[in-house]
Amino acid sequence: MHRSSGILVVVLLALAGCGSGEGGDAGDVPATDVPADVPADAPPDVPADLPTDVPIDLPADAPMDLPADVPADAPPADLPEETMEDVPQDVPLDVPPDLPEEVADLPVDAPGDAVEDASTDVGPDGTAPDFGFDIRVPKQGELPQIDYVCTFPAAWPRTWLYVQNDGVSCGMMVGCQYANVGAWVSVDGAVQALAGVVYSYGGNHHNDSMQVPWQGQVLNYYHSSFGWGWRKCQPMDCVQVMDLSQIVLDDGCTPDRTIPVTCVEVDPTGAVPAFPATFEKCPGDPNA
Image 1 (spheres, rainbow, N blue to C red):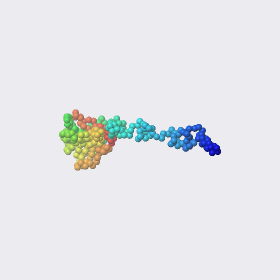
Image 2 (image 1 turned 120 degrees about the horizontal axis):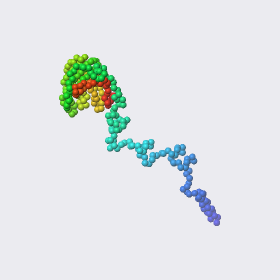
Image 3 (image 1 turned 60 degrees about the vertical axis):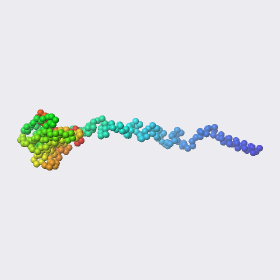
Image 4 (image 1 turned 90 degrees about the vertical axis):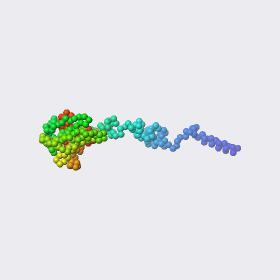
């Protein structure tokens, strides 16, 4: 009897231990490893002292290679190959893509750097004095005659040059070939013929030049400014002083135009146009 009573007591104690959960479900056991000062709804990986509204990960639909601070609608870093074909490749970054290429190369202040030309005997209206030349009427056609009247450098005041040039042939790759058929110099109104003048048409771009033997040297009339595509925009405007071996002694045709002259092409009617009183660099000149 005493043995049976002991067994009963043990059973009752065991049942009492199972009921000590105060009727709660086993799945409702509170977490024991959460600090008391952490809100119950805080994300498990967020420290207690950080705001809970700071995103830790990018949205699930965000591009994998897009930084978190880049808008989702920003264009991709690399355009498709077919799209790149439509994008101008040589337009500077600060020029709108729809701006003509040649405008991108134009300085903002061009051609505002006009300067006064060298002092000559040209009147205020651009007309030249009666220098005594017998000006011909240049023939036109497939190879028109190209005649010029030019000033001399300032070292020779009241000195004028008149040249007549006839076309010889034209080639697709080398441009046209011309020959000088006459040249004269007027000094204080006294005219004399000048031999040995060579006129070069200047290839397909027509960047012409003219070599004038003068007082033991050669004055090479050329250009100090070139515009779009390295093309001249006006008649010869400067002189390179060379020796008789055509070695340049003084290059007056740098962008600074240190030995200026002025040339005008004789009009097809035989009239000599007014000489410009100022000089402006060509539109598109990178040195403007």
